[in-house]
Length: 303
Image 1 (cartoon, rainbow, N blue to C red):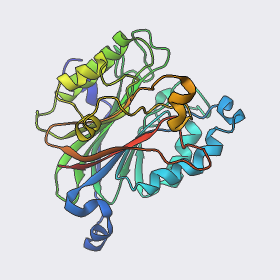
Image 2 (cartoon, rainbow, N blue to C red):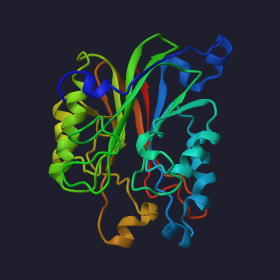
Image 3 (cartoon, rainbow, N blue to C red):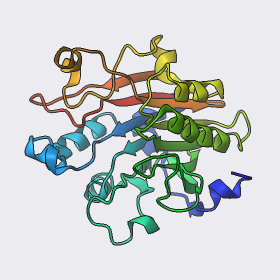
């Protein structure tokens, strides 16, 4: 991980400057006070075993998209996105950039290939896209689909550097999904993300979303917070782990059914000159159907 090239080799500078009118700004709920809304959304991979239970992507898709649209996000960090899900999300969110799915490791893949992606959704009318990139959480971060430290599935990071067209400020949006393997493996993965973030000036605004498969008191999360990443849910709500996010499609009945409390494993972190004014879980359901086996989380940000 020496130098900036290891992390930025895959970045592509894009000259994209969509027009934005004063009327459009006035109509945008997130424009007031230069706030914008960030979601982290583990949508649950498209599995045949879920479909047999009535919980598959085809059964949940429309409601999942409906819930995300309801909360009017400016940015979304997705986790657990498979090929067909990526197609569905692109079609549903045409006013957004959908970035970070296609790559050499996915060439010709039309079904499950052992890699679930973490795409970024970015509202075109709000942000100018300056650059994008990705790297793999492994000892060879520039090798697509690479794995290290005993993971059974490749994990990666997608990011974009954006300019807020309301106030002209630049910031970085990062999204990931850590392994479910050992704590030591997750610590190594977080260490890579920390090292990457430190290439930027200390006060440069950064947002990190994702499913960390780690509780708020765990070593991987402590490593992040010890290195200036702020757990906005904890800061806003004054609690470490009062709310579980992974719920296995049981929602708020998880503890009753399982006989134990769940863990909050989904996060919205900030670093640098940026903070959240609101951070909460999304618990919408329809006829006992949840959009995913995770509660989504949102935060309203100011830079």
